[in-house]
Image (cartoon, rainbow, N blue to C red; front, side, top):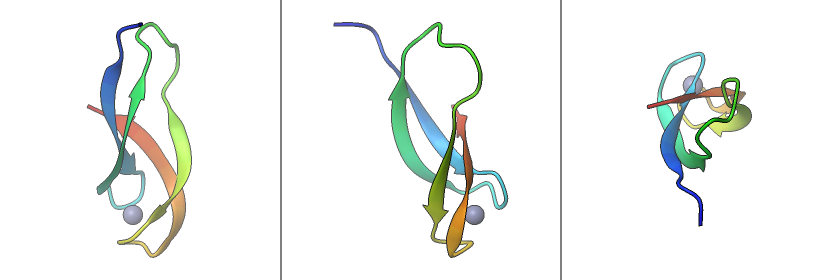
Amino acid sequence: MGERIQVSLACSECETRNYRTTRKPGQKGQLTLKKHCPKCNRHTVHKETK
Ligand SMILES: [Zn+2]
């Protein structure tokens, strides 16, 4: 059972936090995922934020 860090995923265009996820500590690089943003009403790149 590893420790996990909770992060939010924010739209890189309007910066709305739309999703929540977890990541393992020590993982390198910033997590980016293409997700649907309800505000932009399309798929945009979401970046992890704390
Ligand atoms: Zn957006």
